[in-house]
Amino acid sequence: MYKAFATLHTLIRGAVLAFVTAPCALLQAAPPAVDQSKNEIAIVMSQEPQWLNTVKATDQVSFIVLDHISEGLMTYDINNELVGGVAVRWELTDDKATFWLRKDARWSDGKPVTAQDFVFAWQQVANPANAAEYAFLMRSFTNGEAIISGDMPPESLGVEALDEHTLVAHLTSPIAYFLELVTFISFRPVREDFFRAQGQRYAADADKMLSNGPFILTVWVHGASLRMEKNPHYWNSSAIRLDAINVPYITEDPNARFNLFMDNKIVMATGLDKSATSMAMQKRQKLKSFRDGSTFFIEFNHRPGRATGNLNLRRAMQSVFDADALTYKVIGLPGNIPAVSLFPEWLEGNSQRLVEDFPPPAVVLDPAQGRRYLELAKQELGVEEIPPLSLLLSDTPSSVKQAEYFQDVMMRTLGLEIRLDRQIFKQRLAKMSAGEFDLVAAGWAPDYIDTMTFADLFTSWNLNNRGRYKSKSYDQLVRQAQSTTDKYLRNQAFGKLQSLIFEDVVILPQYERGYIYVQNKQIEGVRRTRVGGDPNYNYAWIEGN
Image (cartoon, rainbow, N blue to C red; front, side):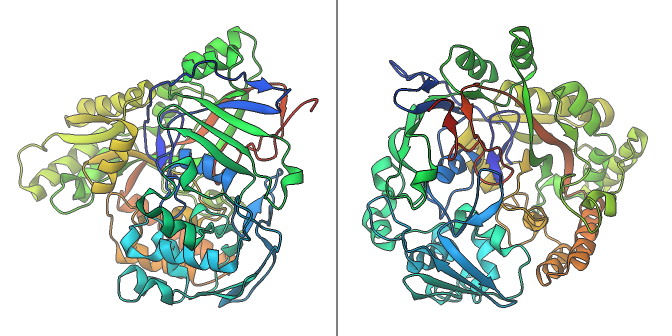
């Protein structure tokens, strides 16, 4: 997913987009980090959520909230183990998935969560009128592709409610990762009567949404604060130990977050940069690290009319970009490692990691070769000089620092002028969606635990493919991997995809991100996760309560 993250880049889970910022909004008489008497904690968010409509949500900030207030058929427990959520039992065959729902699953108004709530939600994701960027996930169901193309009505999607508590999904092909897939935000239920009653305001405010998860969003002061309170109707409420989670601060600044932590205003400060990490060490704070599973990269605009659609121009940039220098010298934080592929190092292969079973082609840094590629690009484009290229990014200091490094390398080695287009979070997302860039500092985080969550990113049908890269060979390899549950055959296809991404220079891999963070000693049970909203406080508790 492209996600909006607290530092460096934004992946809109995702999502991974790049380089986000937001003002710091401090409340009057804000709650303390830990209020033991009220059994509440306070946290910080990097941005205000963009969408809390599960049909359309794409960014990591929204996912953090949604993973506390909504639940799908399957979910993850405190140990990150896949377990039943709304589903109490399930059965999968090559062409069908059946789920039996818990009869005690309830919405926050006390009404039951039914199989029809899932049917309606999935139809809305597939419905082209909603322009959901994750609509492509519904291609897995019978008639899904035709619905997304506008050739069939959403009601014909291959999913049905046999009764209130039995849901059947008809699949176009076997899906090895289907149980993991339905944990994702786009597969959460939506109750039709409430959805239609709210109209265009659905999920735009705290009172315009229903919850079926551990918490309820009770306060949403736009641009300033949020509050989530324990949902008494949640089927597993006895396992939820916090009574409320306050979000009294919104700031992208790592130093501001660390200062809030030191002032006992928030329970965790994550995504610390060099300066904040140094301050933490000086103050003898215990540093923790977490690699969130995401890969960051420079994405090219492949649309007709863009200079970056030229393969030799992309090869020229590939020949001079040093991911090691960016990771170790520019970013310079423990936990980050240079990216060698779209596929991060933690993904499983056949007998070992995928990047070990299928080593990605190595980038050979060769400025002289890069200049030869550049001359070919000029000839093919019919220009004496490549016009200035725009690099879209968010306006945080760390994001700008990384972009300026890229800008310097391209000018110094190739004489290419890169102009930085710094944008605030929402405007950046809008410009990415509209394709208003030559290059964009982007990234991707897993939506579910399977290599396919990265592999299908650059298919022609995926709207998260912001640069609109198109390749029949790429699409065919993804379809091969989607059509079988055979681990060996799937990984063979992924290995070929990895080579194709390199040969076509679809992206310039930068780094796999690791977080440095500090956490209040009174808080236990915080779940760090590669999928969904991270961090997750659903099962957290205050020590001593």
